[in-house]
Length: 56
Image (cartoon, rainbow, N blue to C red; front, side):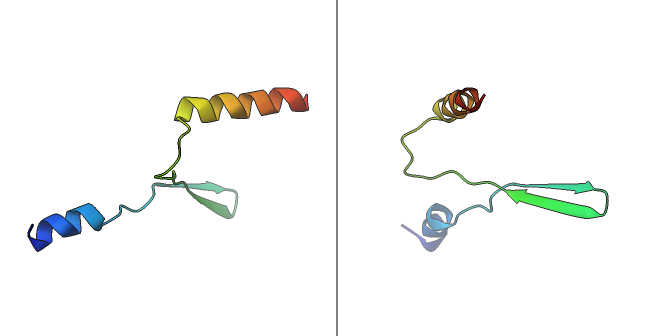
């Protein structure tokens, strides 16, 4: 395996960012997902909705 292949495998991309300005305040939000998570995105959304329903 050459060095270029090793670098491509081990290099992580920067997490996507959302930048929003509201008035004079700038909000910058970065997100990331665990590489070892066993929960799918659909599972996460369902869990969050169920938790919100319980709060009402």
